View 1 (tube, one colour):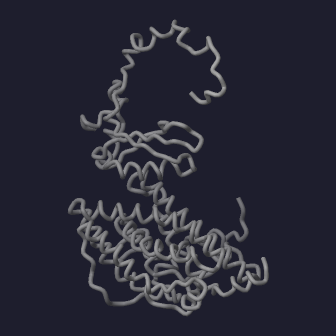
View 2 (tube, each protein chain N blue to C red):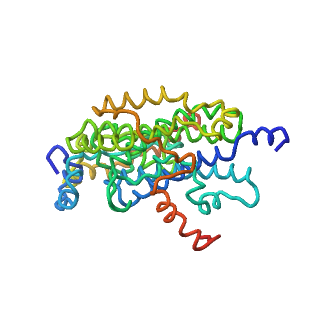
View 3 (cartoon, each protein chain N blue to C red):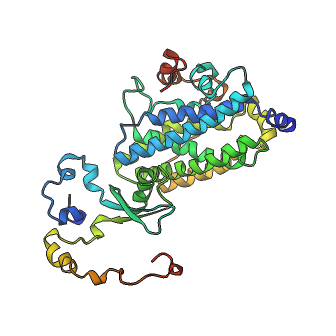
Amino acid sequence: MSAAQATLNHTLPVDYLLHLADNALVLGQRNAEWSGHGPILEEDIALSNNSLDLVGQARLLYQEAAAQIGNGATEDTLAFFRDVPDFKNYTLLELPHHAPLAGTSASDRDFATTLVRNFLYSALMVLVWDKLQHASHEQLAAIAAKSLKEVRYHLRHSRDWLLRMGDGTAESHGRAQAAVNHLMPYTQEFWTRTEYESEASKATGLDIASLQNDWNQIVDQALLEATLKRPAAGGFVPTGKHSIHSEHLGFMLAEMQSLPRAHPNATW
Amino acid sequence: MSAEQTTPAKQAGAKNDVTSSASPAALKEWPLWEVFVRSKQGLEHKHCGSLHASDSQHALQMARDVYTRRQEGVSIWVVQSSSIAASEPNDKSEFFEPSSDKVYRHPTFYEIPSEVGHM
């Protein structure tokens, strides 16, 4: 790597790479919870495919972050040996697969909640990766170009299910609407700014808040076709990307990280 | 399994249809689709399996997720199984056996010029 390139790459704050990576890893882990539990075989595989795409994106981003951090950091130390106050994912992505209830995250899995979340996040990431593939940071641009193809399919898959459930039976409509009502407020976090995003925008040219209109169009058009209503905006704005999370992330990380923490450096 | 979802296997007289007795209601309601995938090197679509889906687009997406996740294909066809007319095993003798002694139908009595390429 030339000195000029190295300088260029360091203009991207590592927290921004971790934010993108944590988003992908946390949602990838959540969707992996459907493995072996899908409503039908084909959807079980579809959600596992989605999960593997996201974990793959997370790996590339963690590798990039680890290269910047140095000091022995690897993709594995970043994924498995950081705790809740270090993660910078959107709160939306760490929520269990069900609406608020008294119980553990393993108590129930609601397919509508899973698919609505995938839809809301994919609709954002299609726009984000599309911008980032033109970033001046070479590696990030390459990761974005690869991820864009994957997330386009995630959007297609989740949007398709949103329409089928919304415009389906009374039961499926009710579940889809409940999931939209539950999850939509969490998307308000997308449009808030963090310092590392502002800093990153110098290298990426991306101001996340500028995507809001395009995202609204994708979401509103799909909700219209699905005969679903968008809940009124407002209320609490989550702070996951500021590393202040819901009560759910800790339990998720505990499960995800238990093996490497019990057996560090274990190999197959 | 309803009448319009009759599969080639059923037409062929399969008595023990496990899908109709053991699976949840959803599988009974979604028709069966046959999946054909064309590989990178392949010239034609080949049958690779079947799945239940609610319509053709749904079937295409499921086929993508189930049958092309190891880079098997560059193109997918799905056909509703009920649209396939299948020959009966009982017709085997009159359908296929008459050709068994017509060796002159095999193109082995002349050489194909190499310029012809794939036939």
